[in-house]
Image: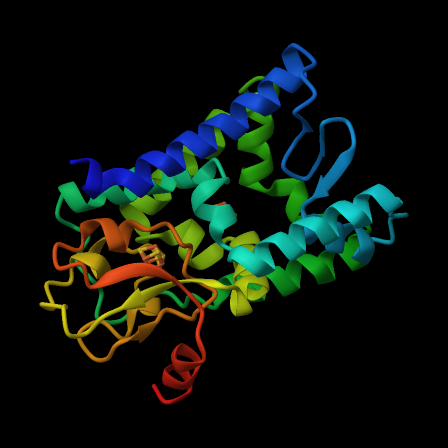
Length: 273
Ligand code: SF4
Ligand code: SF4
């Protein structure tokens, strides 16, 4: 049981602990983590900032303080090293909502692996560019203005209100309309972190010798296209779209998937795929 859910449990502990620290910073003025996901302060000293939000501020013509720039650089370097979309599976509160929708889809058995995606996963990159253009044209941080991530995160820290509506819309959308609809297709922040994490070091590795092609990994993977090598060849998952959630590793009864450090061999296999 523990082996089957170890990363999932660990991720929930990390996600909830981070939320708790933000709440404690707001209610009891603890200084471990103050602010919100767009801009925070650790121990009243180290600034952290969402680099995509900062890019939108820059496009909108806002004056950037040195703290905001340093915070964005720290976050960018961190995710460039460990994997951009670790933010998605280990930090972002929306992940708990979309994972639940996906879990229910599987239970209701309308979560078959699609032969062809009904919507392009590239949509998130177009939305990313659109958000930057709109920020420039309108002079506001366009995505931040309507971002369900900010609405939900602020709701949890400062009081729910509108956040319930955002949670419900995302949940129903992922449950009934499109599998992994928000995080896997539309979210520009997920797209942004996919780009940042393109060259990161922590990678899932597939061992074809051990694989029995049961496809359990593809069934649970929120970005199943990144597991193109399953049953075909031994190599690493090099796509920045992998969230390093570890679900594929936990559900594999054959020990054919594991975390690893990026190697040259993985890169060669990626170019020859
Ligand atoms: S894709 Fe977007 S909403 Fe989903 S977990 Fe990542 S940042 Fe959060
Ligand atoms: S390949 Fe594995 S670690 Fe990456 S997103 Fe899919 S299930 Fe998560």
